[in-house]
Length: 344
Length: 282
Image (cartoon, rainbow over all chains, first blue to last red; front, side):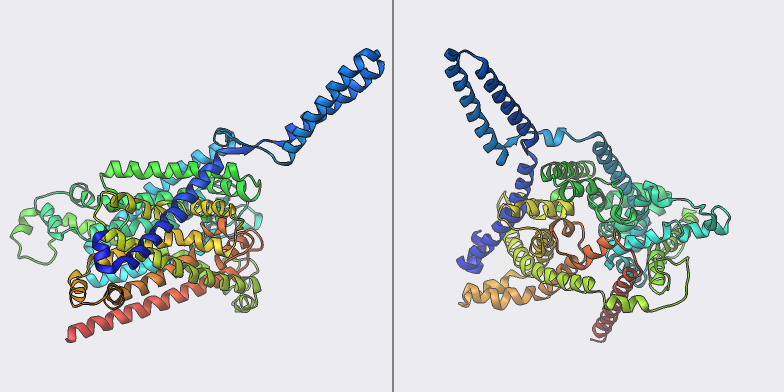
């Protein structure tokens, strides 16, 4: 802090501290805490309350009926009872108007079987997307970083950036047209006689979860290529040459030289791809044309904007966040990289 | 195999037979990969010119430009574009100062808390976008601020500021501190040093960071869709079209995106090439 004050003076340093604090507290930490707080309570359901109130009204009318038949000596006691019940009713009715906040974990534990299944499936699919993207991207990153001449590398980079610059929705949308009932793939299959579009005999690719899968690998592939490329670029080519001259087969050169060097990049790529696909709302929405809810993000969206149950939605969102945090620490552990290597 | 290459004269890239074989496989793989990358964009582009009412390339009904005309008259999309620009400008205004402040503190602060602060400030990049949207929405609800353009801007700025900060940090790490020290020694006030030494040094990065912040804001969907409320941006409007009324108008938007990207990329390459030639000439 002293170094800052010495160079920029009190006013500017104060401004920096103020802005950073506002960002950390007001935009990062507190909103997350509010989300967690929201996930930890429910409003006591008013249906139960109104049932209770109805029951009490019944009791009163019963008592009134009793009072008519009862001998005069008992009447004050019954009247007393009635007025007590009436007080209770007034209290409950006040509560009914302002439902009580009750802190509970039920938003987490109440997750239905279906939602839980979607949740688990989303995590598994996101992990599979990550692995697949890694397998697809590693050779590309290696080729651009190590094999290509500088001019070719620049050209290849441009080829990677152009699709990346196009909106996520539109990138995925193209796959909708390819996998549609009468889309490109089914038409090509018709040429080889597998499908017959005129007779509505097509393969419903879009109905299978694989469609989301393919589009997701496509959408997030570049988040895997760039970090790996960045680390492989710093690998000295002589090391590869040396390994080859010493008789190492290609796979061993990668396993013992290139991949260990690319570790931080692989970790970052995996974290980004997993995080993006686990939390993707766009891809599943497009591939299912906004109808089905096969992805956990869609389940969360429904809790907020269709069921209007923000507390459960917040609980689900926090669950997803925890999974992502666990994944980050897992990657840091597996690849032995620090926080500083992760976001560069 | 290896003895042959060892005795061979040093060529730029020495290759064994196996190495050559691996090279061929890699080249084939590169071609397949780029077809995979570009074929969908080609499909999308073609469908924008198809006269068929539903986006398709297989049901070909002849070339047309009518979807372009229809887009020009689509009020919701034009309004969405305007909203996107508003949000994007707001994101620049919020995230550049935040990013700068964070970068200054992180590069100059020598404390054991620096690591933690760094972790907190980059955490929005590693958080799923929908969660940033949700937490912003829930937070502002306490101040009776409903979802809308303002919340979309705030939610986006949370993580875009982190990207800006990383860019500024990279630039600040290459800064020659002695310039600032010299200016101070010569009696310049700290505000003057900041304005005349530090800001000019950071200016190119501020410009790049602002452009990237704007593009990221325009592109964003996952965060925006939760924070936008009843309003809409270009991208959330496109998103809702998948549910209600898919038409080749969306392809036209895609074509425009593709065209703009290619133009920008070409300009970038030309400028870089000119820069390289100018440097070579010097």
